[in-house]
Amino acid sequence: VTEDLHWSDRATIQLIDYVARRRASARLMWLASFRLAEVVALDHPLNPLRHELRLHALCEEIVLDPFSEAEVADYVTERSPSMAGDESFVRALHGRTDGVPLFIASVMTEAMTRTDSKEPIGEALAVPENLAALIDHYIAQLGGEQRAMLAAAAVCGAEFRVGTDALAHERETAWVDQTCEELARTQLWLKPTEQGGDASEPTYSFRHALFRQVLYER
Image (cartoon, rainbow, N blue to C red):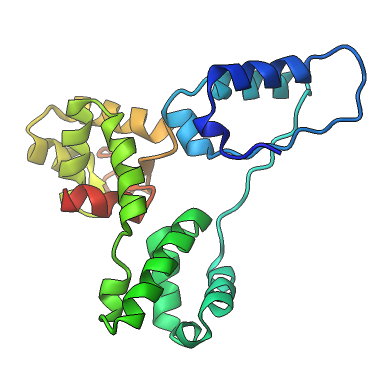
């Protein structure tokens, strides 16, 4: 069992490739976990390997769904029965973390700490330092223009129009649209949203509310 392959070095990836393509039979299963968004966004060497191994039926990839609101409620009940009775907190926790287990665990730990110190429930949903550091790591991988564009988008709101961001960022709409498409393909920063009456102007939303909050606060 190998955890967090998104942090692995090339030698580990080469070993996985070698074991998967071995000719001799062996009673062996290698179970590994990784964050798909990070592998894609950072162009990790695992990304082309996973596609190659799947193409030749040499591996099986199981994508885990995010937690539903009911599953978040179950998790909160297990960790803090007293907080589980607050339905607004459970809904807010699910909405803020998008059901991502890593985010839920970190925010929940922070919330429990702040609740013990009698801080308001709104403060309990602040971005924990460990998650803020992780998101800062992702931000550092962006180009300067991409960071500035996302910062302007964060000010626009959770959902924004390409034209509005272009005005705020003082860039051409076509460039902002292309940059949004590129960031959406990484499956980390943005996702296209359903367009309303004006289909000529694309709209996007942040894939994760916590990412937008960190950008906004920065």
